[in-house]
Amino acid sequence: MQYAVHFNANRCAECFACEVACKSAHDLRPHAQETPGTIGPRFRQVMQVSDGESSIQYVSIACMHCGSPDCMAVCPAKAISREGQFGAVLVDRAKCIGCRYCSWACEFGAPQFDLDGLMRKCDLCVDRLREGQLPACVESCCGGALTFGPVEEVETNVRARAANRLFRAQ
Image 1 (cartoon, helix red, strand yellow):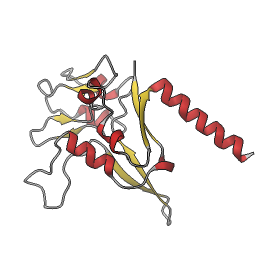
Image 2: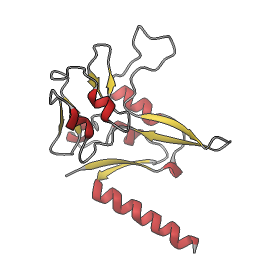
Image 3: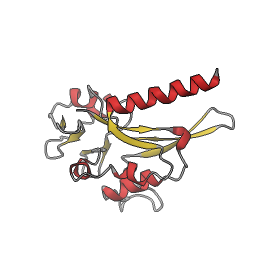
C-alpha cells in the first residue's frame, strides 16, 4: 500500500514547525563548514511562493515518494528502492556512488547531498511509522495542514473538500 503526506495550504500557520521537526527527527544539522546561520540539509522545506506582486503563499514540500520514482529509475547503483509496508522511497547510502543522477531526475528537488557526496532525502519517517507514530512533520503541524494516510484515503478527502467548496460557491 502507498502512503502519502498531504499539504493543505489553507490550514498552514506558517510556523515552520514541520521543517524543524523533520530536521530534529533526522538530526539534520548545519555543516561546520557552512556559514553561520545557514540551515544545512532540509528534507522538508517550507517555501514562499509569490505571484510577483504582494501575495505570498507558504508551501511545505518534501519527497513525494512517487508511484514510479524517476530518481529510482535513473540510479545506476540501484541505491534507491521502495519500502514495502508504507511505499516510502528509500536510499541505501552504502550503495550510493554520488553520481547525482537522482537529483537531476527529481522534479521536486528531494535528493540532497551530504558533505560525503552521498544522497540523502526524506524517508517518510518509516522508523516512526513502524512504531505506530506519524511522520515527525505531520505530528508537529499545529494548524493541521499536513495529514498522513493511504494515498486513496488522502485523495478521497481532497476530492471531498474540493466538492464541498464547489457546492458552497453555487
